[in-house]
Length: 504
Image (cartoon, rainbow, N blue to C red; front, side, top):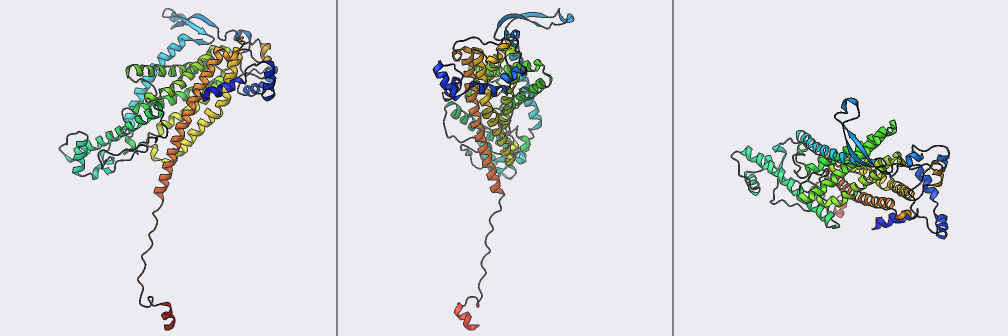
């Protein structure tokens, strides 16, 4: 509600009120200052830029603007396009709005679904090959059964397998319901494997409990869960539960997706000015996030998880606004056709995806052997928080304001200096009540809510990393030296000062 109220207050700056109120508002806020600031974002040219003919890459002809938000029924030819393939080609009906193609969007969702599931299988295969090197000698058993695992930081088991007694081995295997093997080596290997499974189960329960209580029940003041150090760094994937492995794989795939959409495609577009990179970026991003949203719904109906992120279901209400913002915001941009600045859209996408790479990498890093490098992890987490503050707080303010300003102009009228180019809005008498503006306002609220949650979550990770640095520093401090025992006094030393003076 607070986000919606703040967004409505910002939007009210663009409302054309009655004349008397307008003069009062103009004395406090000049909309031209905002338009000049947005010109720096390539949202549209300001008056001076337009007069100089610098249109910042915008297509401002009447022919281009006539395509904005115009619905057409067309045909899309598949497998055709050349004489040799005309026999194989066929046409299917398509609905387009501006540059948005419904059929292309559906195909992007289907292709994304196939690629996501293939990438999950491939990443799991690679991780198994590289990070499942089991060594029983590096494992430990719990000295207490069941092992106490309070909220917050998990504690490592404290009995190394090579040093465990026969009684400890038998007791632990009985606790796990495993028959006692015949030989000592087999018993120690079985105990080590069960210790790995037991530790993974403990953290799995703790992690799921925290997610449910934090995201579903909205409880405050919960201790953030952090797993114990891995017994063997080269076996960290083997020590991760089967439930949490796909979570890490999904974050890596999603981070690579963000890197392609948020770095590679904008750079290629700015270098070549080829609009194909822009359209590929838009549809690829919409396809992945639309697929993940549909997979979340499918999981709720069937219990089968084919999502990309593989988070706890309680996190869905955080991820859904993020995905809806991405899909519908980019849909609006494509529906605007040439009347939307591609440069501005890449400002929006690049800022979100650049910080997204850091956010997703942080989730993975804290579940890898990097947790054994507290200083590195602390510095990395500081970079993550800095990226969120820069891209999703500071930079998000002008991006959100520019988005609302553009939605308002499309709903009503564009700035007067663009009139010579034939630009006109949709002509709503009350632009704040138009579907385009209200929908944009809702999407901005969705994404602001998501950004706030990500900042809060990563600040918790930063505090955890700082606590580990302090613990590492304390462990490296030398123990205070014990004072040497006092020497026994001789007969002369035991004399009183008066007697000592007299004898002298």
